[in-house]
Image (cartoon, rainbow, N blue to C red; front, side, top):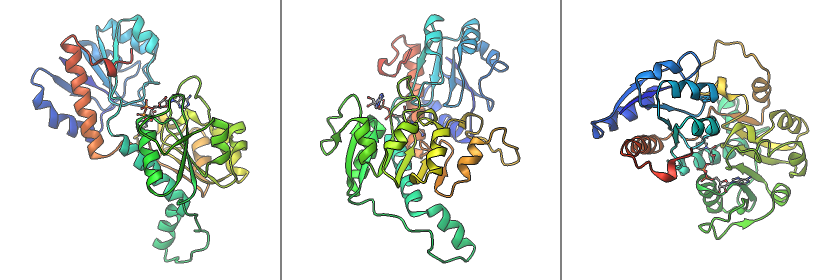
Amino acid sequence: MKILFYDTKPYDKDSFSKLLPNYPDMTIDFLKTDISYHTVNLACNYDAVCVFVASDVDRKIIESLARCNVKLILLRCAGFNNVDLEAAKEYGITVMRVPGYSPEAVAEHALALAFAVNRHIHKAYIKVRENNFSLVGLTGLNFHGKTAGIIGTGKIGAAMAKSCHGIGMKVIAYDMYQNPDLPFVEYVSLDELFRRSDLISLHCPLLEDTYHIINLEAIEKMKDGVILVNTSRGALISTEDLIKGIRQYKFAGVGLDVYEEEDENVFENREDDIMESSVTARLLSFPNVIVTSHQGFLTEEALEAICETTLENAMSFENGKPIESNVVS
Ligand code: NAD
């Protein structure tokens, strides 16, 4: 089986190359560039393509893949909102993903963002480097005894809920399904979660009904001084509404590993670029906002698990028995 990898970073190449000797019938070629109308035809001699979170696999790309006889799209990530699944189905292309590589990796990053904005670690780091040892402006609050509101208690949300419980927080959650592994969690309505939470962390997928789940109406229901963390998908939050909320001093802190405009930025070094849009720049201008670049997944354990599952997905497809739980279309 020949697989063409798009949008490959050095850490992808390292981790996949390590495991590849275990799969003698598989060949991988790594491309730095992402899949696009200009690069999709490079996949013509391949059985499968492997893409990542920022790859925009729309209908036109899928049509081209089908023309190239590509039968399989391997997502080396959990989310699949960047692939036109209907088109994939129509053209008989199977789409497989890595549903849960290391939920703790993402949950720990969500926690890191929550801690950092709460205790102003980003400001303290800069201040001390400038020999400014003043504590003014660095007051946080104890998470212990406060209420964490988790939206989506699947694998990552559950890991986050357990961590919050572990540091002595009361944990409430909103999900259509109650996770039986979380007996300490009180499930409530979304409105109640907004009203009661001191920390809100988003862990639901981006779907039609979760698009802008955090909008002005939701923000108005939240407690003043709430901390909001998003490690799930950018478009769960309306950025314009978030900025309005920040300007109304609603938030003690906001930690974003994902945000609406991230696609152009994610995993790229753009330090010499002039930004085309001001939304990200405005977000970065607030002292109580920390933005990271979709790095929640980035631990050695998670990378290893991503490789294993992606290659197992490819093998299972090749053997005619694709791992059912990993097939999204
Ligand atoms: P999961 O499928 O295990 O859990 C998702 C949960 O959300 C499920 O319990 C589901 O019932 C719930 N849900 C669905 N619709 C909902 C709604 N309308 N309201 C509330 N809950 C709803 O997924 P997961 O592995 O926990 O991943 C969660 C998300 O994290 C993914 O969709 C992905 O977008 C994101 N993610 C981010 C990174 C990163 O690096 N930042 C890495 C991996 C995954």
